[in-house]
Image (tube, rainbow, N blue to C red; front, top):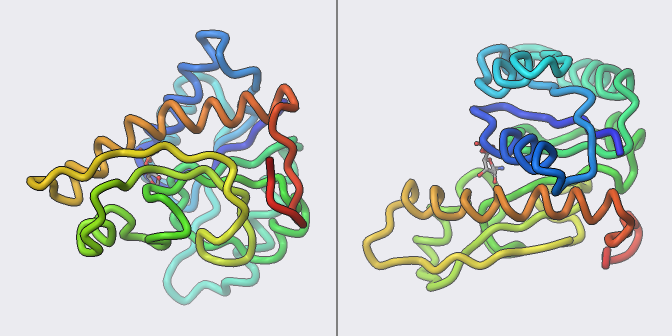
Length: 198
Ligand code: GRF
């Protein structure tokens, strides 16, 4: 199964997917890494592994519709079976969603549907929950609203800050995301954009 990974940041989830692939635990090939930020550490890591990289930057004042079109073009040119958002910090527009219906997944640092958005760990602390975690879900037009594929719990400690909680959540993300990709690759998870996935 050919996978394109979309990133905005340092790419620890991208590394985890590569580690699982190398270990024979994730039956996928990363055919490209696409970022909205030239400076994303994930791009450097990907290039170092010989993975094709692309940047489709969205700067202040840029037309968002054209950016969405360009992003969809770049991703589609890599011909993936699956698109994985691993720390991609933008909401996807119709062009990419329509080209890959139900074939885009995202990892989020909270137990959805609680605490969607950019501040999952902080929002979980503010909400006073004792258990948070991470979620892998199918991407739809909303913000972290698509059908849930898998989740892993992480206890919230009284001394936690958003950073310490996020760091422990990431440990779980690095297990969960490659596992879900593998399950999709072997057909153990069926992606269906119209119904809850199982
Ligand atoms: C992860 O915590 C993910 O849940 C969120 O962004 C973070 C990306 O981290 N969507 P990294 O770039 O993979 O290290």
